[in-house]
Image 1 (cartoon, rainbow, N blue to C red):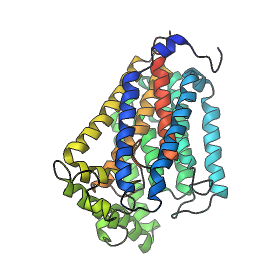
Image 2 (cartoon, helix red, strand yellow; image 1 turned 90 degrees about the vertical axis):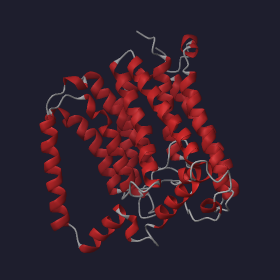
Image 3 (cartoon, one colour; image 1 turned 60 degrees about the vertical axis):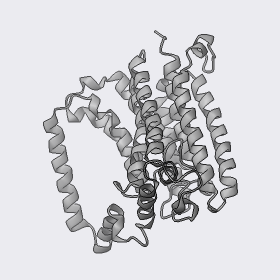
Image 4 (cartoon, rainbow, N blue to C red; image 1 turned 45 degrees about the horizontal axis):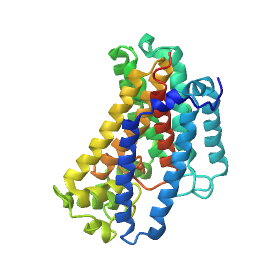
Length: 368
């Protein structure tokens, strides 16, 4: 089986519905970015053109991912995983500290932790493809998947990128509902974890460390510094009302009250200018895309493809959920962009790989 063979029957089965949902989201993101950049944000004149270049690169990468039969990713799963871990270790060794974290290579242009999420999902799908999740009934049977998740999470924590570490952990937990471990075992683990956190808080952290964590969890404790961005975001969302203020008419956006409105808080711009109706339309597109991803998992003809598709849906679901929760004040600000919507390079390329793999699985759903 040639690695890059293109089969006409696969092209005929291309998933145009899923691709259309993705194009719709990226188009709305670009329209939103034009407004955010028009406010005079630093480098605003080049932001849209750079984003379009990254989208073009993402489409190219997506095409490569689609052409290679997804069963090859199964064969090389642990090699891909090891390569991603090596990149994380390299980042720890050579990266310069940026915004308090050592998480970027090439002068802030590439974030290896974004790729590590994909490598982790492929490795988990490889394991569960041979050990069906429904056959797992004891916690100790989850030792290998726990290690697959713990290694990248630990390396990202060492990089001091807590937001991406939390996101990676949540993506790794996406497959847990598929296992048959009794609820009492999870309850015991939850009690143990809560006791360990309480002991760490009481005896392991100093006063200033506790204050940092409290400020992280509750931005309103410091509304003029660490909590400023989220407070302004909530004002922007509220001022949008039902129908919004109009494109490029949002005061919070155009008067630059939102310092990172084109990246982590792009959804704030949308909510202010397009209101509740526009926000719900965008979230509806996300929901449709994620639901279609689950349909791809259900229609997959092998266990690896099904588990991989569910994990890939997690790579798109959790960043979107956390980002919206950040914007409306239901979660602390942890620097997670909205997939396919926010300005950025590494996150967009990571989402493109996830989408390419989902299209790959969907195109080959008739393979027996």
